[in-house]
Image 1 (cartoon, rainbow, N blue to C red):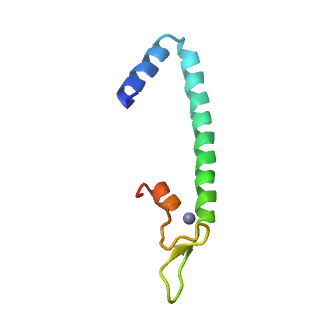
Image 2 (tube, rainbow, N blue to C red; image 1 turned 135 degrees about the vertical axis):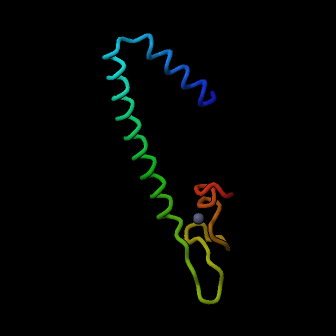
Image 3 (spheres, rainbow, N blue to C red; image 1 turned 45 degrees about the vertical axis):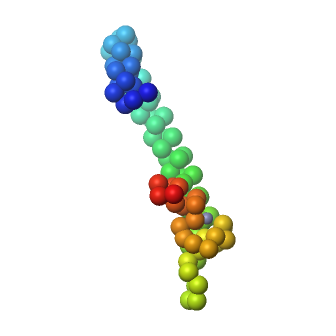
Length: 83
Ligand SMILES: [Zn+2]
């Protein structure tokens, strides 16, 4: 579903509700989304802490966890959107 279609769907859902319940719904959604965002941010941070960059004097940087021969490793590249 595109953003525009989802916005239309949410607006239609709101129009079918009494005004006070729309506010309650919106507040509940904001609280839920903030908690979800915090959980996802913490999960990404845990992954980043696991995939540490190691730089040696005589070899290229690599990921300590993956033991790959380059950095960023596939996991960090995927998190950064540059696989
Ligand atoms: Zn890695």
